Image (cartoon, rainbow, N blue to C red; front, top):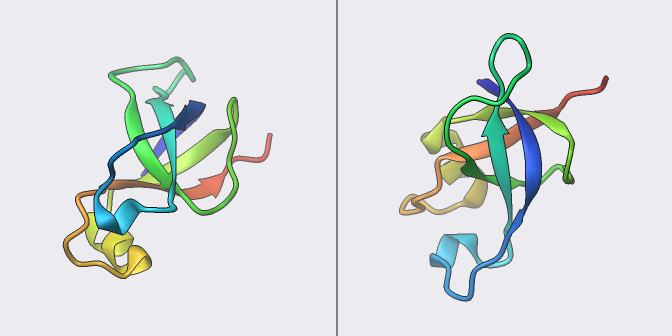
Length: 85
Protein backbone atom coordinates (compact mmCIF):
# COMPACT_ATOMS: atom_id res chain seq x y z
CA UNK A 1 0.00 0.00 0.00
CA UNK A 2 1.12 3.52 -0.77
CA UNK A 3 -0.17 7.02 -0.06
CA UNK A 4 -0.76 9.13 -3.16
CA UNK A 5 -2.46 12.32 -4.31
CA UNK A 6 -4.84 12.45 -7.25
CA UNK A 7 -3.77 14.86 -9.99
CA UNK A 8 -6.64 14.19 -12.39
CA UNK A 9 -8.43 11.68 -14.59
CA UNK A 10 -7.02 9.81 -17.55
CA UNK A 11 -8.93 9.29 -20.76
CA UNK A 12 -8.17 6.87 -23.56
CA UNK A 13 -9.74 6.25 -26.93
CA UNK A 14 -8.63 2.62 -26.84
CA UNK A 15 -8.58 0.53 -23.66
CA UNK A 16 -8.05 -3.07 -22.70
CA UNK A 17 -11.47 -4.73 -22.62
CA UNK A 18 -11.23 -5.16 -18.83
CA UNK A 19 -10.96 -1.37 -18.38
CA UNK A 20 -13.87 -0.24 -20.55
CA UNK A 21 -16.13 1.95 -18.40
CA UNK A 22 -13.62 2.02 -15.54
CA UNK A 23 -12.47 5.35 -14.05
CA UNK A 24 -8.69 5.82 -14.30
CA UNK A 25 -6.87 8.36 -12.12
CA UNK A 26 -3.43 9.94 -12.49
CA UNK A 27 -1.76 9.58 -9.08
CA UNK A 28 1.53 10.82 -7.64
CA UNK A 29 3.03 8.81 -4.79
CA UNK A 30 3.79 10.59 -1.51
CA UNK A 31 6.88 10.06 0.64
CA UNK A 32 6.95 9.99 4.45
CA UNK A 33 7.01 13.82 4.59
CA UNK A 34 3.98 14.09 2.32
CA UNK A 35 5.95 15.30 -0.72
CA UNK A 36 5.50 13.80 -4.17
CA UNK A 37 8.06 11.16 -5.12
CA UNK A 38 8.58 9.23 -8.31
CA UNK A 39 6.70 9.07 -11.57
CA UNK A 40 2.88 9.26 -11.74
CA UNK A 41 0.88 6.04 -12.06
CA UNK A 42 -2.58 5.23 -13.35
CA UNK A 43 -4.95 3.73 -10.82
CA UNK A 44 -8.40 2.19 -11.17
CA UNK A 45 -10.94 3.96 -8.96
CA UNK A 46 -14.28 2.58 -7.83
CA UNK A 47 -14.55 4.73 -4.68
CA UNK A 48 -15.25 8.14 -6.21
CA UNK A 49 -11.92 9.83 -5.51
CA UNK A 50 -11.27 13.11 -7.27
CA UNK A 51 -8.52 15.58 -8.08
CA UNK A 52 -6.61 16.70 -4.99
CA UNK A 53 -7.77 13.79 -2.81
CA UNK A 54 -5.23 11.77 -0.85
CA UNK A 55 -5.76 8.06 -1.38
CA UNK A 56 -4.33 4.72 -0.33
CA UNK A 57 -3.27 2.76 -3.38
CA UNK A 58 -2.72 -0.97 -3.61
CA UNK A 59 -0.46 -2.61 -6.17
CA UNK A 60 -2.04 -6.02 -5.65
CA UNK A 61 -2.64 -6.93 -9.28
CA UNK A 62 -4.35 -10.21 -8.39
CA UNK A 63 -6.83 -8.41 -6.12
CA UNK A 64 -7.58 -5.88 -8.86
CA UNK A 65 -8.06 -8.58 -11.48
CA UNK A 66 -10.57 -10.26 -9.14
CA UNK A 67 -12.31 -6.90 -8.56
CA UNK A 68 -12.56 -6.34 -12.33
CA UNK A 69 -13.55 -9.95 -12.97
CA UNK A 70 -10.89 -10.43 -15.64
CA UNK A 71 -7.76 -12.53 -15.12
CA UNK A 72 -6.09 -10.97 -18.18
CA UNK A 73 -6.34 -7.33 -17.06
CA UNK A 74 -3.02 -5.43 -17.31
CA UNK A 75 -3.99 -2.99 -14.53
CA UNK A 76 -1.94 -2.99 -11.33
CA UNK A 77 -2.78 0.02 -9.10
CA UNK A 78 -6.21 0.69 -7.55
CA UNK A 79 -7.69 2.91 -4.85
CA UNK A 80 -8.12 1.03 -1.62
CA UNK A 81 -9.30 4.03 0.39
CA UNK A 82 -9.70 7.78 0.49
CA UNK A 83 -7.76 9.52 3.29
CA UNK A 84 -9.94 11.71 5.48
CA UNK A 85 -7.95 14.71 6.71
